[in-house]
Length: 368
Image 1 (cartoon, rainbow, N blue to C red):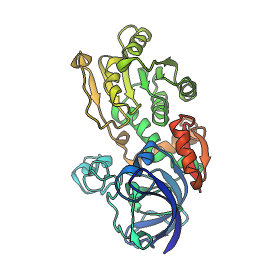
Image 2 (image 1 turned 90 degrees about the horizontal axis):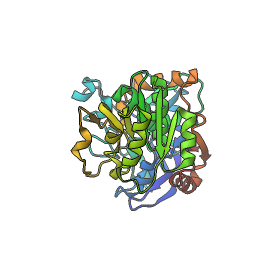
Image 3 (image 1 turned 30 degrees about the horizontal axis):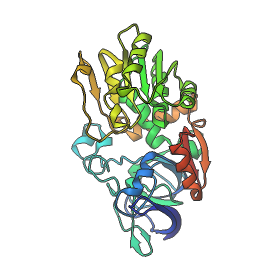
Image 4 (image 1 turned 180 degrees about the horizontal axis):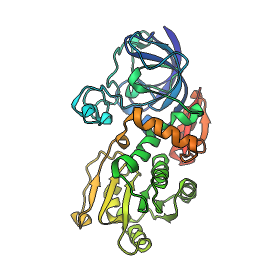
């Protein structure tokens, strides 16, 4: 048993910093000393999920203990964590779709907290078991996870950079490469240039897109987008319903027909259909940000032969994709260090959330 300082959501929209007890690993579990934890809008939302939980679902750290059934990790290994933990045995895992595992995925199973963890009593607060967000709970000095949640870090990489791979980086890059399969020489539009949008932009650059158009209402974010590969920017108006005016500008930039691909990264339900307005006939629109609300779509936007896809987590296959991302980072193609705009201590989490909501950071990270 080890003591661990952690951010605890109360389920009613608030959090506090408290001390947990974390048990030794059993079975295929691994005790990880968290060195860095990414800060995401989902973490903010997790405060209101109706139950107490250990916050955080992006992280990297050091293996300090392993269970008797762990085969691929050793004490001292550096690891980045993955929240879509595959079982390896269900139908979807057999189809190579580990990100939508029918047994363990906390999203497809409809449970963003407890999916796939072996011993839910392994972490306690004041003597009572407490669950970990997405079975990780990375805003904690220590966390106990399954081996399948860990990918070994094989290149020289700061923990702060490694921590952000397991959500926004994978979602953005994977939506481009795994889901939409952007072709070399193509044109791409990215709606929203937050952390996920910036990773869509650099995924498109790595994939060989020659025209990458970033759209946002924040001019500072558009300047940031250029650093990640945007070749053109459009400053949108808040009053532009469905971004239809911006879509006309896109068409003027793409020979009057629209872009080959468009990616929605705003998480604004009213913009769920907006990427359809940006693409040419037979183009591909991709909803990246995870909109789950009911939306209305004018079917005229589908004319003609347009494709709309809604992938989860960039269709991540963590044990395949994370090492690829590591190699792209080592080559200098994948920008991570600069993406970590500011780091915080755990006690500064409120400040970190404020900076996130104000759009000051590409990505904020808690460093332990």
